[in-house]
Length: 256
Ligand SMILES: [Zn+2]
Image 1 (cartoon, rainbow, N blue to C red):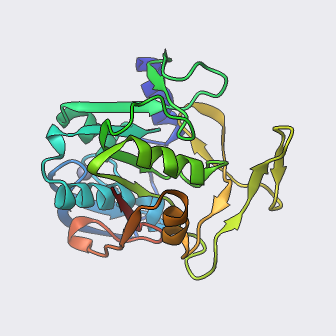
Image 2: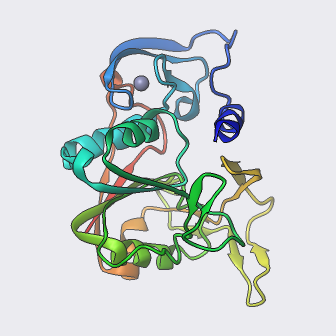
């Protein structure tokens, strides 16, 4: 586990001192670590560089925790499943404070539902959780990496308790245009790339990174409804006093 944590820190460039000049900095309240802090950016791309001085969280992490607090203030008592967490900021807070927090990672080729490298192995397209067993599914920048997100949304809906929700972020990079598919699985299981070059993001449990399968557009709420029949609210927060300002930090709340 310690090995994995040190890998995560390296992979996500945590804890490194930077000599870059400060773009801006302001005090405020961080929902990720639940205390007053200073938020500092040393790069204009605030989505990845506007950090809480205390917990190292980035804006989307603070935005999703704000939504969890506001919409589900009793979250500490809930059964919370988080897919593919990186243990800093919000995920760390959920892990430390929620009574029933289930972090999972997806290890392709490993039996589903078993513990592997310290994590329960769960494939969002075929979860091993029972029907109506989860209060809150949480995912942060996971749904742009799934080959069959419609099936994943159906699995989320199946396993949510009535009254529960999927609270998540995924970059809506096509926010003014329709969703665009970037990669898919062909009939023989081979990956077909639909954009050139293919796009990859960092993956805490894979050195190769995660392939981006979809550039989500403004139509994501309709996509989710068509897939699983649930409605989704989109929350956009711009609040410097909470350290929440950046591109692509919409929080989606799909309620059952
Ligand atoms: Zn913080």
